[in-house]
Amino acid sequence: MLRYRTFGVYSVYPSWATSNRQMSVMYRRVGDFLSDWKDESQSTKNVLEALSDESLSQRVTPTGRGLGKLGWHIAQSLHMVTEAGLEGLNAPNEHEAVPTSAKAILKAYTEAADSLAKVVEKGWTDTQLGDEVPMYGESWARGKVLSVIVRHEAHHRGQMTVLMRQAGLVVPGPYGPALEQWATYGMEPQD
Image 1 (cartoon, rainbow, N blue to C red):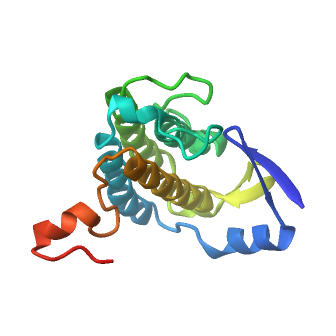
Image 2 (cartoon, rainbow, N blue to C red):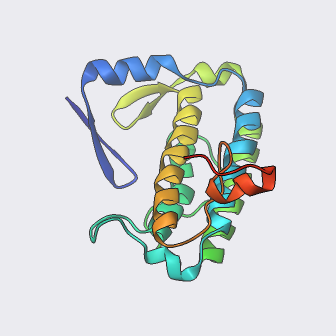
């Protein structure tokens, strides 16, 4: 079993699962990533915009991450491209404290997401996306690094929407209408 550390979190995958995941999904063109990133980062901004300062401490369990920590972690984790050798990213560092303001988290994420698009477009070519780089004790193609960033963000965005429901917030639908959005389409919410 392989054990690796990603931004303060340890994950364990059997070696066969890790190699299958690595080979299956990666960006091969910078333009494809930038197109996806525009939509994915906007979905994350929509989630972060819906947070209130009071909701930032919402957790599922006493030891679980709160909404504020999850949002901050998403912004910090964009440094995966730094780990892959790309320079110039303007994003919060791993050990920066979580802000107590939802607006501060949104602002930091927005700046980091915009910075990510710029440094990827300027720093990597389509050909370079196939280059292997050391990542967390493994060797990943740069295009896989970008794919992991998108999926990692979607994963935590999903966690955040559950916590938002528990906190009584209106949840924006990242990939389709959320409960409150059905009415804007003139439809009854689906079960």
